[in-house]
Image (tube, rainbow, N blue to C red; front, side):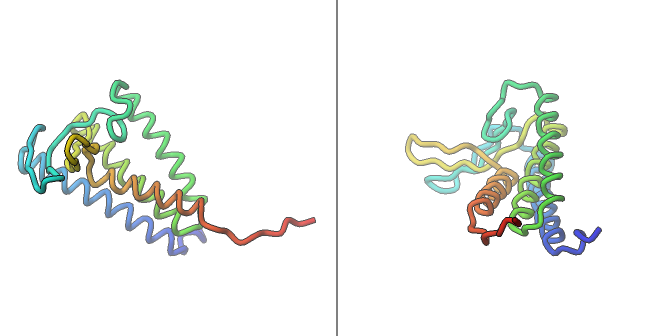
Length: 163
């Protein structure tokens, strides 16, 4: 249990839980309290709208034709793999990246169980160009992946193989 004393464990758990709580709270307020059902549209700026779109796929609508049970199975396997990586890892950057991705993915998985699809709200666009509609969990997943890529690409001290 030596790894429990590692500060990267605490910080990554806090950030992952924060993402999960913040995304759940946002969706609860919009869907369950405000009563949004889908199709609501509030123009905020000339390039950003606050909307509710239901995503039946994985990230950014990928795999939208797959059954909900299969999506949950795929996400469950991914969570197990990420959890195993998180436990084995010692780098703060990697642990935070994994925790952000897991916090967001767990919240989106909860959406699938509770609502039958993922609630997405943020839509950026310019002229005829339109970015995917996304949510707080998607931001955390993307940030987590960027941290994992940054950690993989960062220079490491050379190790001397034992002869």
